[in-house]
Image (cartoon, rainbow, N blue to C red; front, top):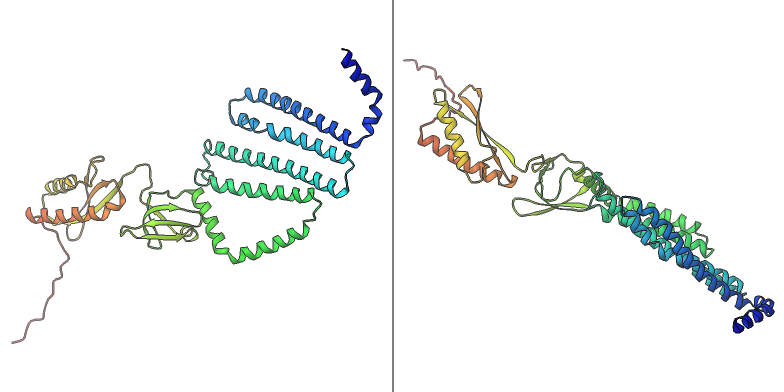
Length: 358
């Protein structure tokens, strides 16, 4: 106790001298800011954790876990800045140190905001039905968010160093207009890609046909273009702006993975209609590419001028096998009709020639 009393007595006697010393006052401020930063970190995060524990979501817990360093270092750097001001340093050193502390504080909060933005986007994308926000578009929005946050932070960093950015903003605006005009096709493809991903008329792996004539599998979808693989194993890259302006037939669309195929044909009047129906149905069933469920069926469509119009309906699993399946079924129909003497009528024309005069 005698040592403590001696220290307290010495501090009391030399209080005015200590306070008058700028460096000692700065050291006291630094020491106090460290203590205050730690206390504020514990208090704020403790209160927020209690509030977050009452919610059902884990998003707030993730955000609170990121707040420790920003709260601690913000108060710490504020204290460092006050200490620099108190130390009565040369003006240029004072300006540089305060600017560094301000910049460091801004960068810390920018990092926090960026992390919170990414976490929020990932959390939202897994729980929303919005087509615009999905796994494929998530990196795009994350990057756009980072760019916006970075620009926002750069603005405040310039202000912390007393830099007038009005001229920079004006130059950036002119440059943006020039780049926009020069890259208008790229910009059009970019926004078309976003709209395609949001509208989702097709997805990777779908078999589609455009009114421009392209038909094939969607190999990959990008922000600028989409790649197709045709049945000839040729890869085609089409700008998204062209696709967005085209009529899209998605042969893989619908609630089912299978696709219906129709084959229409005529048989001559007088044919055994039941036998013809059974024959057509069996031809489809025996083809390995034809699905058993739903079962192939034959429909009597109409009494045509030259014969009975029938339609064979069956289902296939993959759109790209349509051509070869129709070819195989048509070939077998012709063979079976020939073997069973079923006539396929065809248009005829009766020509009357004038009689020769004797």
